[in-house]
Length: 127
Image 1 (tube, rainbow, N blue to C red):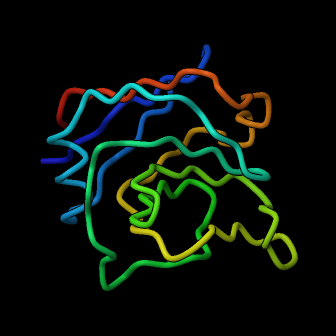
Image 2 (image 1 turned 180 degrees about the vertical axis):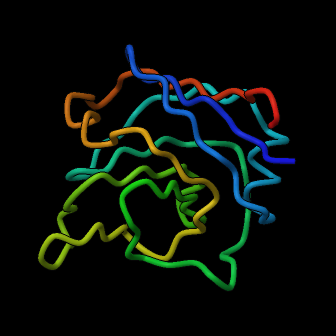
């Protein structure tokens, strides 16, 4: 059974399919989440009350469509382009993060999201 969640920012509804990982389980069990957006280059992130250690498959460079959890900041990170520490066109996060979900949403639309805007994450029906 696949689980998904909806991330709502402004008029955007991002449907994310959860991976089968400890981080995904912890996030799923913590939903709904309401927070404020922070920006860092072409990345948005938002704080949570979730605490998860770095997983074995954690990575700092992610692909567009991957949604990560940043253990150091207890935050969910959505990269959609270059950050201040990117080399070339890579999406390089601040440090290693646990990829817990993926989406087909055109994340580059998030360029219009500003610091301090609200974000809401909730469970969707399972497939």
